[in-house]
Image 1 (cartoon, rainbow, N blue to C red):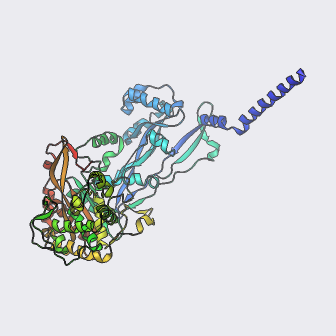
Image 2: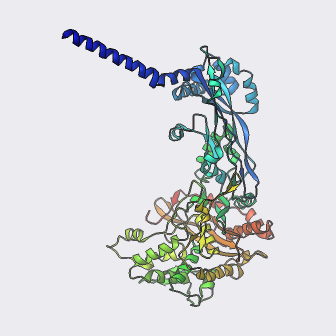
Image 3: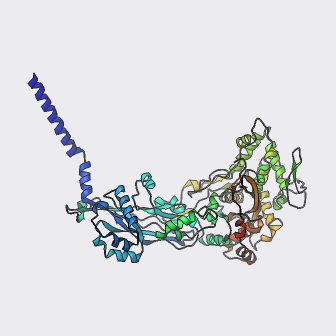
Length: 623
């Protein structure tokens, strides 16, 4: 019996041992993979990145050759570090640190030691690479810009970091990736697909030819070219007009939603973020907390919309049937309300006014009356605000528009929950008059320039808009995405837009922007002045007002709708109105007849205004 047990143990142990060997040699390929990994060198063949064109097929971005010094740590042999550092113009400590990082990343995969050599540096090092075993030169392509504008639109490329590699396995150390703007949003289309070559090595670590006759090799696939909706000439002109000013210009083609210009000021030249100087320049731009050149004000600046918002108040009033175009409302230099006879001030103009003339002369009393009727149409202000909010948001305000750029802000359209919290309801009641400043875009309402431009396009289209977008074609094929080709309808009936558009036309013919008319172009617009508050030492402090202007042209079959926002620009027609008129004429006529407007804008700077000493942050109600 004891012999049987002993034999059984020996047999079972043998079977287990044989089974384990069989598994390791037949089913488990990890040792084979490791063996192949030690005998195979992987070389990546990077494709050309896709070109970027403007709407008129002008080349904006192409490629230029670049050369990276790579290392495979396991292949390193002792070398003269001082000589190597001298050739590459780097410190020895920097080299050793990069070598340690490369080994930690992977002993057998390549890592970048020195990126983006110049042609001269590459030529000099190429002659000496045989002395430095384990190092080799990888050819890539960097961006080459044919424009000095639109850096915020185009974005930039940079080397991937560990976080990106972990999140996106396609990339390895040293790869480049698009960041921000078009480069970031359309990275997968632009980058192409890198090719791979596997080289067989012998036991002396020498390359002896393609691994398995190149069976697993792949060719690179060139990145796709993309065509933007941007008009490069209009973009450049907008940036020129915004020199020494801060703010944003967004121009849209109403019938398509295509973004014609997306200007942020101040901006920077796109070639600053190319090559070995990229890191130094980016750091300088990033820490410029005063001008904030990396901050896209056109997409992210949240401001009170000011008087352009009166057009929305008028449209909601017509839709809710609380006003008609014939009723005249009196103005005694302001709107008076409440038990203490509080006053919402207004500038001097003739009185009383109808809707068309109310828009033309931007009467605060008229629109405060209409707004109050909109809210008080319902038994409780909460219901009135909810209905008002529904109408306003149908114009794309108060939420992300969903455009194809990677940054943005949603703005603010306050709802009943907002005011219940602000007024501590039900402890304290609140009424329409407590939100009366919303009537003129000066209350709690906040909007970005692109939202105002989109709102203007919806008015130009008499009740609908196409989602703003920056892409026009990919590899010369027009976009078919219904996200950008399907119209979004507002809650306002088309018939109500005619009087509002007539009022916007009168802004130019005999209203607040009558001195901004352009010959042969019937422009419809609305001036705006937004109060500008900051917190200084915890106190609400008023600074110089912002200048705002919205417009579209021509009145019939409009080709362009835009919003201009100039920080600390005093009042709507002073800076933003002039810029809007010039942008419209430039786009429609490709020439400027109003040289007086152009000379004034180009010769006036707001730098002294921005240099006024204050230490604070933008003020928001109940923040």
